[in-house]
Every structure is written in C-alpha cells, then in structure tokens.
Amino acid sequence: MTENPDESEWLLAVAARAGDRGAFERLVRLHKNALYRFARRYIGNSQDAYDIVQDTFVAAWLALHRYDERKSFTFWLRAIALNKCRDYGRRRAVRSRFLMLFASEQDTGCDSEDDPVGYSEPVEATHLRQLDQAIASLPQRYKEPLLLTLISGLTHQAAAEQLGTTAKAIEMRVRRAKERLRMALRQSDDTEPHSEP
Image (tube, rainbow, N blue to C red; front, top):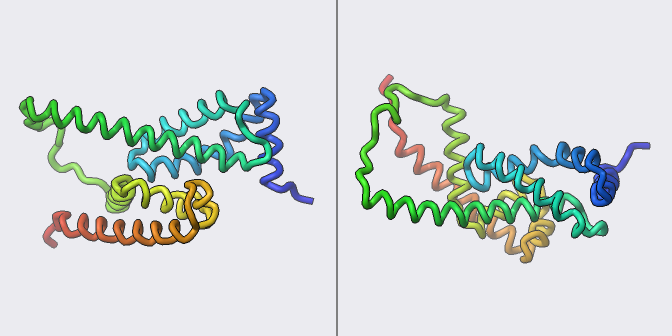
C-alpha cells in the first residue's frame, strides 16, 4: 500500500508544528522548487525569488503555531508565499518611485563598462527572461490567478478559494492574463533587433 502524499505532508506538518525541525526540513524540500517557480514568475527576478522563498519558509516556521491542522499545509504555505510576493511588489514600487525622483536630479549617463559591447544571451534565455518580465508586469489581479493555476497547478476553484473570489472570475482573469502576455511577447519580438543574414 502506497502512502498518500497529502497524508504524508499532513503528518510532517503536524510534527513540525510540535517542534520537529527534521519534519519541517522535509517540508522545505518538498515545496522549495514549486515556491521558487511561483515567486520567480510573480516578480520576474531569479535572485529576489530565491530570497522570497527563504522569507516564506522563515515566516512559516515562526507561524507554525497558527497552522490549522484541518487545512492543507500547501495551501497555507502558498498563502504566505503570495503575501511575500505582494510585499516585495509594494517595496519595489516604492523603491522605483524613489529612484525615478533621484535620477531626475542626477546625471544618468551610462558608463561603457556597464554595457559591454558584444554581449548576447542565448535565444532560450532571452525568451525566458522576456516571459518572466511579461508575467511580472501583469496587474496583480491577472498575475495571481495565472500563477496559481498554470505554475502551481491549482484548479480554478482552488485558486478562487486561495484568492477569495469565484471560479468564473479566475477563469476570466486567466484568459485576460494570457491575452496580455501574448501581446507583450509579440511587442518584444517586434522591437528586438534582427541581425542581417
């Protein structure tokens, strides 16, 4: 008889809540890759996504006493990660406004060493970076349903429960998110310089 993965996760979560660090470390190993993919797509930056995942697990460890054993640990952990991504977005917006104000008062000339001539990324890396940036630039109301359904693999109903809305609203927002992504990626393809054969 094989072990039910949900039951196994639940047992680990209950043990971790009781103070078992080993059980929590196993939960980290189970969830870190999925949370990283989610965070990277949400914010569009690999290094910051890594930091968000670490912050998520630290916050989860500190809040384990509030974890409700009757609910899915994955759901609870994803809610923490979602809040960390939202916090990051708010901090980035404030930092961006500050930098724009600062830049308007300073000489913003670019040093040639900052932009070496001849630098080029492989095509796949370029497209992945463009996709990450396009997803990260989506409005929150479209980005979150898209990531919860396509990246985290939730059904529309489960994503609706996570975000406090209806499955129909999730379906509509995912459709609109995909439309916006197609337009953004088409525009970036149109603006890329094409080399002569």
